[in-house]
Image (cartoon, rainbow, N blue to C red; front, side, top):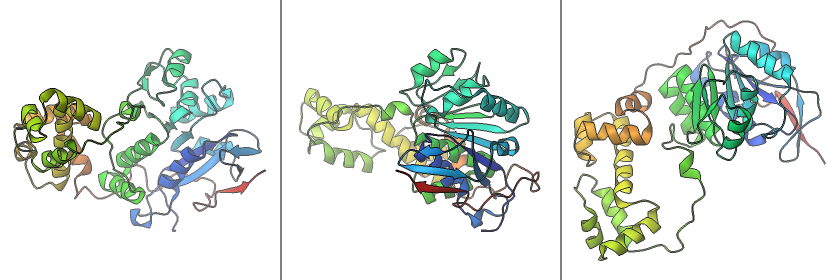
Length: 351
């Protein structure tokens, strides 16, 4: 891989490292991506404490850089933390404050939010973390508005994300901000995941799974998806399943976890997303095609479910996005040589 000149991304290493969260950062910012050009990210990691450093899964880390690399990073990522009640070293907090003051961005995955919270930089702002840790973050840092329902949040160049996998969503969003929608889509495709997930943490909370699959409802779902533009009523759906209205509503809820109306709106919004990305229809035509009638109705339900307008969604994810162009100088300040991805930190099993 040719040397790149883009933003320097540094992932923090610590004893008890969350291996999956670190892997996310290395995967997105550290893999060779020659198709992105010389302006793509540089990646390294550095320890925040003396070794030996162990990681989840029986791994031991031997870093090749010291914490001074934090002072030169454009983006610093905290891949999880040791625990909600584990103290954050003041020397690390000071280093992160100084980095932020000189213009660096800070990001956290899952419990890494506790590290950023300890710096005080999130006071007066909004942050998120895994829903299991939200109450602890509120209790420990009452000056932070903790949003337990979002996959990720941003506050003055500081990014926080929810559970571990939500870190992927956040990092892809950072790629989008730096290099544009096409680059973000390319990274997402390589990860075999959507470039943008709808909803928030609430959709991942534990919910009992229906014990039985109701065969009378399943064919209806296929029919509804195939005929989204039709003006379906609940009574028509029940009749199609040859059920009384009361029985139908109960079984539909058991099978899908949602009411018929809410489920249908969700499917219509998903189809609208597909049509927006295709870019062949106007908003009014899409609203009619998916059964939402008018552009205003489409915008209402789209923003409620996706969090942005149809126009914003199309600008982010439609094909034919602008050429990839980094938001940093092509001639960054000199930094110590960064090893090639995959060689920057030696990992060995330990007993």
